[in-house]
Image 1 (cartoon, rainbow, N blue to C red):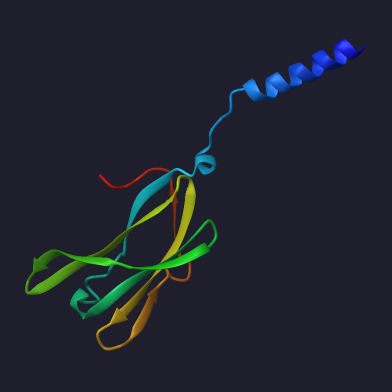
Image 2: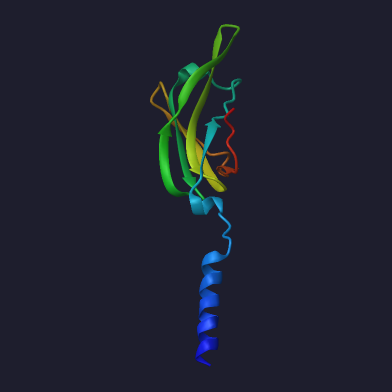
Length: 131
C-alpha cells in the first residue's frame, strides 16, 4: 500500500511540474505601444485656439487612471487655417481595454471635455497601431 501511495504522489508531482503551461498575455505582462489621437471637428473649432490637450485614461473600467499631455503636430494648412493633430502613445498590457476622454485647455482659459457624448471612448488593445 505504501508503494502505491508513493507512486501516486510521485506521479502527481511529476505531472504538475512537467505539464506544459499556456502563457497568457496578462500573465507575462506583455506591453503594447498604442497611439491615441483626439478627434477634432475642424469646421467648428480652430486648433490654434487650443492651448493644450490632456489624455485622461484608465484601464479595464477606469482603473489606474492617468493624465498625459498630448503632443501636437501640424497636419495641414488650408485657406489660411492651420490644422493640427493631437496625439500620444501609451503602453498597456495586451488585451487591455483603454477607457479615455480628452481635456482641452483653450487660450481663453476655458476648459472643455470631450467624452464622446457622455459615453467615453474605449478601445481593446490587442496589437500596436504604430507602423
